Image 1 (tube, rainbow, N blue to C red):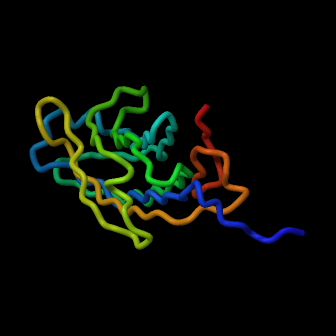
Image 2: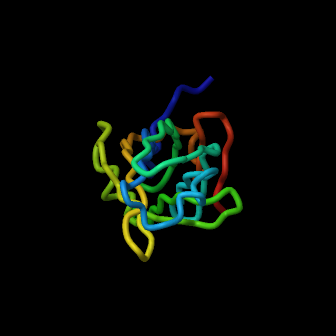
Length: 153
């Protein structure tokens, strides 16, 4: 049986959303957040969090939404984090780059603002890190902490 081998062409990225906090004066109707989901989009890959409920401005919700992505070393990949209705209407978004958010093998804390055209809807505390990928993780895409997967083409 072969041992574990490092894949020098790939990194494993860990994306963990800890909390979502609605702005004190969000730029949308709070009823739209009564049942909502956070979504990670990394390149062509996508993963959604279980449904959470928001009832008032300033409310903080613990998400513990963890996603694993295998991507090429030195990725220049678009990252979006959104909050959306269960029906799929995206209410607010953060735009970034994977290489800017996960620069270290240690977890790095970021507070990301989710915005719509009117302003800030919420902020999300996330922790990201990168690590060397190992053989067997070569399929690019998502692996979730709940065991599901969603590969990109």
